Amino acid sequence: MCLPETLASAQSTISRRDLFKATAVAAVAAAAPSAIEAAPERALRYRSVIDLTHVLGTQTPLFPGYNQVQISVNRSYQQDGYYANQLNFNEHSGTHIDSPRHFDPDGVSVDQIPPSRLIGPLAVIDVRERAGRDPDTLVTPDDLRAWERRYGRIPNGAVVIMNSGWATRINNAQAFLNADSGGTLHFPGWSKAATDLLINERNVIGIGVDTLSLDFGASTDFAVHYSWLPSGRWGLENVANLADVPPHGATLMVGAPKHYGGSGGPVRLLALI
Amino acid sequence: MCLPETLASAQSTISRRDLFKATAVAAVAAAAPSAIEAAPERALRYRSVIDLTHVLGTQTPLFPGYNQVQISVNRSYQQDGYYANQLNFNEHSGTHIDSPRHFDPDGVSVDQIPPSRLIGPLAVIDVRERAGRDPDTLVTPDDLRAWERRYGRIPNGAVVIMNSGWATRINNAQAFLNADSGGTLHFPGWSKAATDLLINERNVIGIGVDTLSLDFGASTDFAVHYSWLPSGRWGLENVANLADVPPHGATLMVGAPKHYGGSGGPVRLLALI
Image 1 (tube, rainbow over the protein chains, first blue to last red):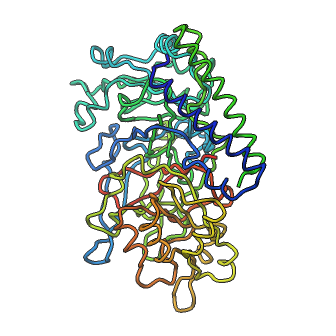
Image 2: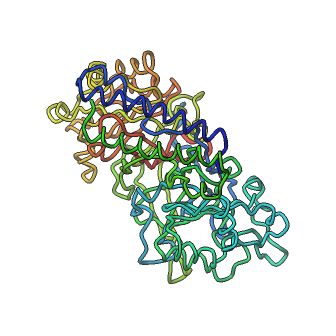
Image 3: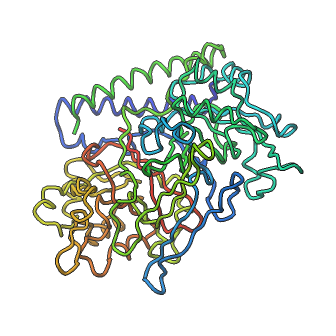
């Protein structure tokens, strides 16, 4: 799909590039100091930065069994002249990454993920309409094929994220977990058939969800966690603001933590469009 | 400065851009499905990703007075079928960001920094030679002017980071803190004159150091912390691998944490070149 604004942006980029090319060629010929001033202000070209990260706080909804996040002041303006906090939380709190090590003793820990595998083209799979009717819905191979019919093959090195609309519930833990009277959770996730397709037939670096888990809430076997993570790829959970990025064309930067031996941890997700 | 390799890269980028332009124009004309397949694999163009983040661990050198980082297993393969850790650390541990709130009650907390101010052109000020002779050396206005004579004016929205060579000491806390017999620390940092120049005469989003503090180790007044952070800009401390990025031309993505009210916290720093 090529919207007029995309085309206009591409053309203006080219114009600036051509200008830069002309200047660069002149610079090599003349080795003139003025060439320095022609250096681009931004090495990278993008129009805006969209934050796909929820604020992490003491009320952040967590997968059952984890303790709430603790943020405690341990330096204060009054006593110390400055302010700082002690943080105490499980790695799998808020918008966070699951490293392969989380479900695979032989998988890489979060500090071992190669940095080049923390940035990639973003593909958003929109299942909001279906999730509104059925909280147990799954991202299927058909959803991936439907995306590809519209936007082209899932790019190499992509991050593929489900948008189920669940992020709008983030400030209501009860609605976010959506447990029934028996305690079974009900929220959307990935089907193993879809993640198997990505493992076997595409070349992506990670997947994500806007819910608490890569597996849907009612999962009893965590089939996606137990197959996707041991494939050497990572997952993102509790992703925010997916309605604010295009389904295709953004680039996602995963600001993963880098603590030793980590199974994952809170991330900062910045999408460039 | 325009190295031949830079020129070659610029030219090849232009060729691909021109190809994209031609394809995009054809797509608009024909609205043909084949245009979809011409979508770029990467929305963003870059050659490599350099990680400017130290691994955070229980031995990470800290500013005196903070407790060591704790990483404790609280889910194990044997007992739980998967692995996860509880993390307990001060915000100012390892490669981390100081938000304005750290030294200014009215400053923004780390979750309030606009995402567009977490990405910018990277300028590296190399003081390694001087720091090798004098651990109390400071980044001065003259250092900034020397950088600008060589690479052009510090770009708008830049992040300006001191490379003193200190990162090579990271696995030796004694050498990293470099305390004398009286307990005074000795490592390089920014002069207030230089950061005042950046506040008043340039338009940058943040500064950084490869040492423990924006202020040099022997500082008693923390003049940079008390002026720079209240100016609404942030700082990075304990930055790694600065020798692996060019002094000019890279783009830095700051994967800052986003916990509520934070004075800062560990970051993932990825430089794209």
